Image 1 (cartoon, one colour):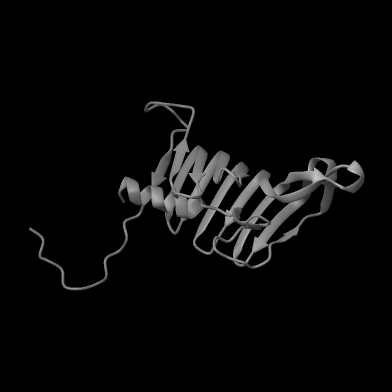
Image 2 (cartoon, rainbow, N blue to C red; image 1 turned 90 degrees about the vertical axis):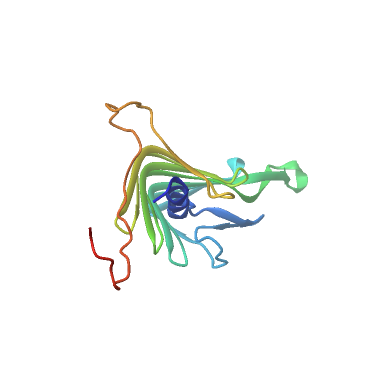
Length: 187
């Protein structure tokens, strides 16, 4: 698998979720207009901060795509003050944080990390901690995965360098099997 194919695979595995479909909606499943269903053991809404905190086995589901974490925090953009000058209104989704035991699962890929942060306006997803991305048998590991959702470019990063670095990006890639057919004799 070439570097370009690996980058595309990583981006496909991770161009996760939380992509803004339009100014007022969020997407977990790229290209889907299905509603997002969020559930957790508890929900706290802090209107003054335009923040919703979903805690305890939090899960967001859209179509066949799922984002799970111990805690999901959704931040909306602050709008103009309400009538009478009391507090600001909250608008479109601006950012999503996933904290603790983060899993992003699509029908094709599974990604695990300790935390994730999706910047809707910046179209960037950052997954940190012990990041593991799996696509079929292929596995990619590292400390920090940064994905540009708009371009599909992805970078797996680590703090350690050199052969002795224990957390350097690492991939185990299995070649695709060729369809059975006439084979050339070996020499």
